[in-house]
Amino acid sequence: MARSPLLRNDAFLKFWAGQAISVLGSLVSRLALPFLVIYTLGATPLDVTWLRLAEIVPGMLVGLAAGVWVDRLPRRTVMIAVDAIRALLVGVIPLLIVLDRITIPAVIVLAALGSFVAAPFDSAYEALLPAVVEPDQLVEANAKVSAAYAVAETAAFGLAGFLFELLGGALTLSIDAVSFAVSAVTLWAIRAPGARAVPKAEGAEPGEPFGQALARGARFLAQHPTLSRLTMAATVQSLYFGISGAIYVLYVSRVLGVPPAVQGVLYAVGGLAALGAARLAESLFQRLGTGATLVVSAAAAVVGTALLPLAGGPLWLVVLFILGQQLCGDGGDTVFDIGLAALRQGLTPHDVLGRVGSIWLVFTAAGLLVGTVAGGVLVEAVGYRVTLVGAVGVRVLVLALTWRFSGRAES
Image 1 (cartoon, helix red, strand yellow):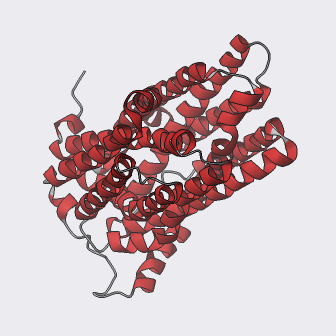
Image 2 (cartoon, helix red, strand yellow):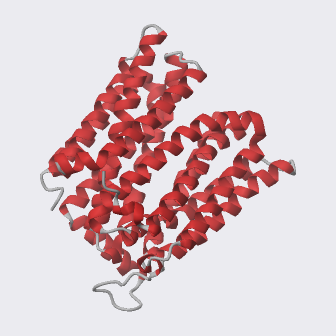
Image 3 (cartoon, one colour):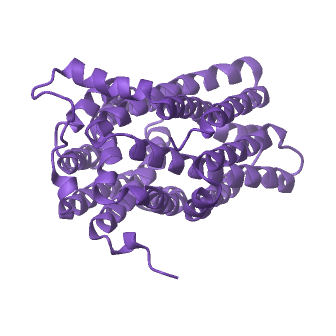
């Protein structure tokens, strides 16, 4: 088998490795931080809710401005600066633990600051990848990045609890700080001219006002028939993720009675499913076409979600239902997200890619926020299973939106 040209692309390999390590550290923190506030600081459910909001809302509020900044600065430089800041912010938490000064409000404030500075990084990341690979390599590049993330997910979720028990919160969270530093170094090492250049805005005058610059990106997104519908589909998908994230673990633990050790294995299977899907993604897009692959992956996610409210009976049967959900849901979502990212990067002019990406991220963050609140409210009002049936309906809506634009997805 011929070696992929991407594996000879030094800039992409550095980008790929650095982001994989960074995601590994961040996923360890995603579990270790709630463990810290719950087990060490005795957080209430309201405290955990505030922490979750602190991780979502600041980035959503600054997201639109971040897109304009990213389109006016070298994207690589923005990402290096943000990684340095995030390493310092995350590093403060272990320091506070060692000094016995850690409090829940301090964790929430640091999480909010991390969300705030992450917005320009996410927008710059969206725009940097097309600068280091060829346009016809975007699907493959996103698939390889997703595969690395899936490996990181499997490893991080398996390690986080063990490391927290063995090393404590301070050393476990220090892993994330180190991973941000590694990401900054690998980004600095990228020498591709496109990654280091300031984007050239076509059709814009020097000193273009902020509002006008933002409006130009918004107009492009709103007027593009494929990208506008993709944005709708991604927002609805995030609504589902919010609902699911709010109740999934509680449902599996309290209603289905799955022990924590078994849950850890099941979630690791989800990471392996994502890895397998990422490896198959390029072949699927080549054989079926972009539109058909997006429809098939969205349909697989519907099937996976539908298995959750149907789960019941003895533990072995419950495990089979959840395994099916992890395989179909995580696998379908991985392929779907790879297609969305490649289309967004491939169909958007480079000079507005930061703004288009940031607007996209604001919409999806809003969907996640609404879904998180809705999940908590609905489960109190109608119970877990009915809420999950509603989540299946949300997935069906994603499929319907995908079906509508699938015939024009490659226009």
